[in-house]
Image (tube, rainbow, N blue to C red; front, top):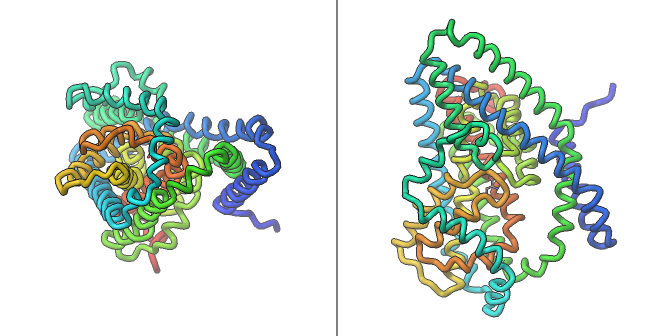
Length: 430
Ligand code: ASP
């Protein structure tokens, strides 16, 4: 009998071949062929994932909420989830600050490069700055206004408006809980079977994952080949962010899991979530990865759908540990290059604004850049400094998205355990 190759292995092979092809294409001048004939397949895969993200968030959240069958349970699970999300985000920012203040990557940055980068990225920055100014000029309560869609159809047309869909789904689910079962039965049945269909769709889309990541990665390598010199001057900054993400993954999350789920087997956790991490790496989008995160968390980590349906969609926009760590490092790095000595108070402002910025960043590629401008402005760091880091942002985005989705999954395991809804046989030692 033929043995089936597991999905995660197929995705790893797809990624490795994608990298190899990308490097070969750069060497053999096959960049155009790659962009014309391979890249589109990556875009198709990405679109398929994004296509399913909005229905998935809506259906799973509504199902997750009415599954709790009373408002008190919803409140308890909501507080627990948000509390854990905020705690891990603050821990990640502290890791970032500790690293950047110790390694001081900004002090070794070649001075001449500063002007060069600023010229190169000035247009890009002014666009982002306009967006950030629009945000800062608004009332401090604007983010609440932005969470409430005036038109649900419009909200579903933009994956970066996920918070609006979450809010609508929350209200919809709460209304269902408050009504007698008889009144909502047809909608409940409809949502239940829609949920089955969406989950099946994810299975189908995932069949394309190995080819999708191959195409995405080979095209990325080709697109980035021209920017390689940026890496040499930004090497230490790059390494600092990677180190931060690495510490979040191999120190913070294992400790976090062990505190709440003592028997958790960290190896099983990482093996279970690996396919989602690889899709996160290839797509740089937590929102696009949500279908895979959901599948892996419920099927491999033993988290009951009732918990995953609630914790994961909320985490996509709210919980970004990799992003918050990176924002802290980027802000202090820029300050170091400009020779600004940040006071304790300014570093505290970074903790607070990076927390809010990570909550407010949409789970899309580069989603946190506009929010980073707000962190810089609040801490009195020149926004032009963004030019220094934009060149290497995409690869770092790939890594921070891995940390973002892994944090969501770890929290879902912990919430499931506390609710008695974790199948411990999947991720605990016997
Ligand atoms: N790409 C990240 C995510 O989707 C957000 C960011 O850090 O820009 O989680």
